[in-house]
Length: 62
Image (cartoon, rainbow, N blue to C red; front, top):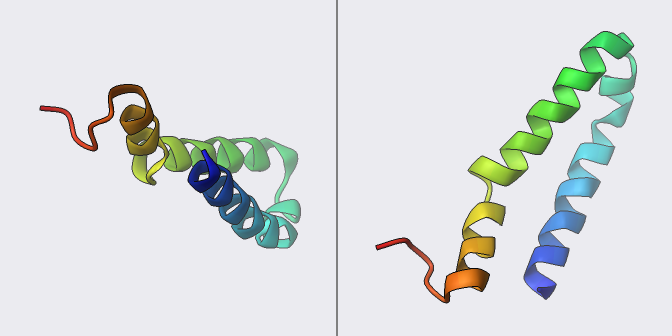
């Protein structure tokens, strides 16, 4: 649980550091950027595997 909280904190800091750049975009462009970054967090970065490990006790599905 602490690893997940730490990763969420790191991801939030990283995305927050991009807020100046993203904030200059029109609102219609900001929404897809944040949705895309959210999907990256779930599907590409380790959150999906960590949650699967927490539920099953296995790192990979067999």
